[in-house]
Amino acid sequence: METTQIKCLLLPLANQTKLVIPNNLVAEILFDQTAQQSADIKPSWMIGHISWRGQNLPLLSFEELCNIASGSTPNTKGHCIVLHSLKHREELPFFAISISSVPSFEYLDESSLSEAFENRVESPFVEENVYINGLTSIIPNLDAIADLLATRGINHG
Image: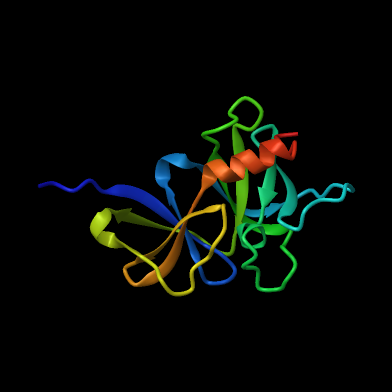
């Protein structure tokens, strides 16, 4: 029986955890991007907005969103990844997540993943905690993130 492999990006976060994102959801990886902060009071996970292809995209900290932050303030300048939104495509076609360094590619199938029981992150924004080749990783719930941004009125503006 043939197994299907999916090309994924492993996105390094500041706390040494990696997010696992299917490659087809990635619009672009940006380096040395500066976020524009607004004067409005914002949640701690909202870093600001970035300018990308003529659009202003929300940039968020996944660590802050899931309360797994290292205690440092999210950096407004650094690397990020622009993701396609599968929900709320009219008002939020894309959003960005801050990453700590250059991501890596990995071809994954069911045999590459196993459920992680240690260092689990419990959050509505986490689909699953997994080990990939022995390393703790998180499959994010991107629909829940898009729902949160849409319900808070945070869009590409």
